[in-house]
Image (tube, rainbow, N blue to C red; front, top):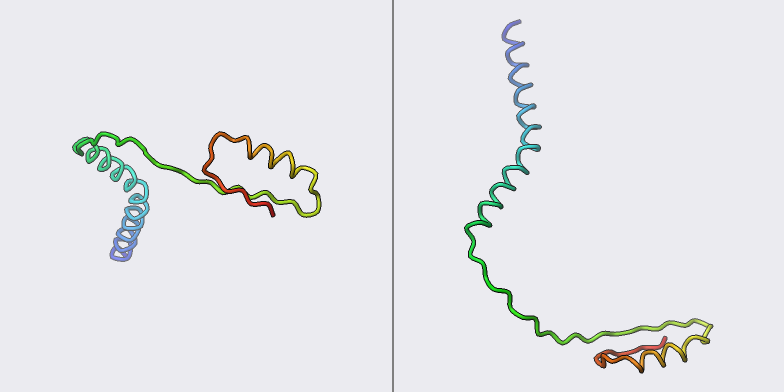
Length: 87
């Protein structure tokens, strides 16, 4: 009977250790990340020089009352790198 209780106690401890690892692992990984970030060399940020181009899709199924004001608004935009599609 003592051997059975010992085996059950060992199984219980193994299960508890397995479940505790789910709580301990994020903390350990967070500490490792923090220490690695301290020793990592910092690079200066490069300026962004990107030219974005946008696509604007205007949909109108049967109601075309707002198409003229929308197109007029699109023509008045100061940023010229876009394509407008009327569907």
